[in-house]
Length: 472
Ligand code: UDP
Ligand code: UDP
Image (spheres, rainbow, N blue to C red):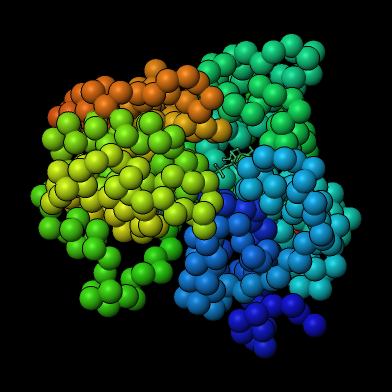
């Protein structure tokens, strides 16, 4: 029996590709975009998405419901995890714990994939080192979707070799062969600690990647020319498998069918604002900002004099978010900015927000999905990376001209907060700078060209599908 939901009675188109995302919206979003794209008539694959319930955050569960509701061609495959005792990792990030629970359950994937009749598997990078051997035993072609930048992929591939050569010394600047030097300050915090759960997973995954049948990356050749070329020509690692740069993956809009009267308040407000007048502020779905920094950000946005839409996140997992906005942002703030600033603690439809004419600047943590969405919309980014891969991604933003990065601004684990005054000055400068805007529009043009018929990303995805057909 096929353990699928949805229209389990109909035959699946050939080849049947199973997608295996890990945890967190940053991983789920590109997977659902890939699922929809592969199942579209243009590519014609049968697609299943392996899901673990319950999800860590409610954003993920809402996203999955919307995906399976709106796209019956994409099927759900329930992945039941083995019992996992999280007390082994006191204080660990809940998303990393889910990665670990999934990694330890990898042996259970064998029967699941065989029963589902999978002809190819696309696993998340966070699970790669344990899933690739399972697929090999099944003689199932196994690809890895890398959910961050190609620059980060090149770091992931090179980092184990760097550690081996470094013989236990502290991690410094990392020169990636054929790419560029990633300064020590931009290396994800966890990678400075060899015993960290993330580091152990990251190094294990990096070592195993060469054994994948190929890598998919949500980036495009013109956006990250150095990293993509170096991965392909063997500079980063000799004999590395094919790299399919398929980005920016097209967003899947689930809300398009909503009647206008159901439109959220912030969307109605955005539609009423002048072109390019609003600063959109979001630090993604994964991390909270300290209370002191939230207050300074409030001061900065108020003092900038610009309109703004600010998505405030004060806890790591959305289900825990109980704090009151007025209490977080300081006495009287919401009253003073009324009409000029919108602040929300809820989930916003970022894709819809970024499409609005009224948005002029995106203050972003540079989660890779946010970066690719800004690129697709030609929206200038003021990069404020906070953690993990975000400084590496901010480097791509600055190099490509998609935006500017104030490198001295704080990073999780560093002392100090950025003052409201500095934030206000930077926002004013960037909002007034026409060349920043023009460069972002050139990135948008290049992105559109990459995904159009015959473009680099279009051809890369078609080649990937062709391989799945040929190998199966
Ligand atoms: N997102 C959204 N609404 C929110 C917060 C995030 O739609 O309120 C989406 C965003 O558009 C992106 C994803 O969630 O597609 C977050 O991924 P990203 O890589 O940008 O950052 P992460 O949340 O993983 O740090
Ligand atoms: N990553 C990686 N190797 C791993 C796990 C993650 O290269 O073993 C990448 C992943 O693509 C992500 C980044 O490192 O973009 C940071 O990881 P995390 O899962 O925290 O990403 P987030 O949830 O913030 O998007």
